[in-house]
Image (cartoon, rainbow over all chains, first blue to last red; front, side, top):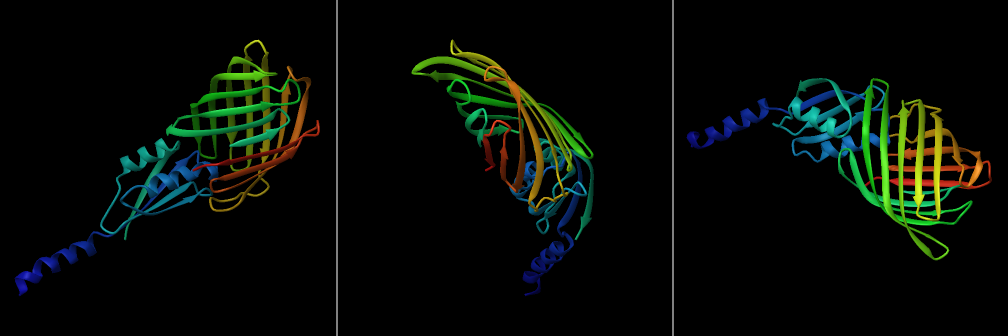
Length: 95
Length: 178
C-alpha cells in the first residue's frame, strides 16, 4: 500500500515546492492604456500565465504564472519587445 | 476606425499581421471642396519607435493605392502619409503630412498637427481623457488653417473623439481594437 502511495506523496510534495512566480517587468515607453492593451492580450495568450496587470504609473507589467510553471526573462523581453516596448528590468518572486 | 471631420468621412479596417505592420481597407469621402470618393487597400507600418522612461515617440507611414471617383469619373489614386508623434501620460504632440494623387481629379498636400494635455493621469483600467487642439491645412480645399478643439476619451480598447472646427464642422472619430 505504501509503495503505491509513495509516488503520489512525492509528487504532491514537488508541486508544493514548485510554486507560482510573480514577475515584475519594468518597461519603457508604456504611457498609453489604449496601446498597452496589446501587452495584456499577449501575456494572457501564454499557457504559463495566470494573470497579468499593467501599471502605467509605475511602468510595471506584473505577471502571475500558473502553479508549478514559469516564464523566462528572454521570453518576457521578446513578448514585450514584440508588443512595442523596451524592458528595463525583470524581478521575480517565488510564491 | 471611423473619422468624420472637416476634410470628410473616413472608414478604415486594418489587420495587424506583425508587431509593426498592418494591412487594411481605406475609404474616404472628401468634402469641403471637390467631393471625391477614394477606395484603396492600405498598408501601415511603424518606421521607428523610441521608448523612453516617461514617454514614447513614433514615426509611422500609411500608404494606399486604389481608385478615386469624382462626378462619375474613375481615376487611379495614390496616397501616402507620415505620422510623427510623441506622448507621455500628460502630453501629446503629433504632426502628419499627407500627399494625395487622385489621377486627373486632384493632387494635394495636406497637413495636420495636434497638441493634447491630460487633465488627470489615468491608469490602465481608468477612463482616459485628453483635451486636444488640432490644426489642419489643406491648400487644395481652402488656403487657410482650420482649428479644431476636441476631447478624446479612451477606455481599454475603445477610443472616442468629439470636436468642433473653426469652419463649423462637427468632428466625431472612433476606433476599436479587437
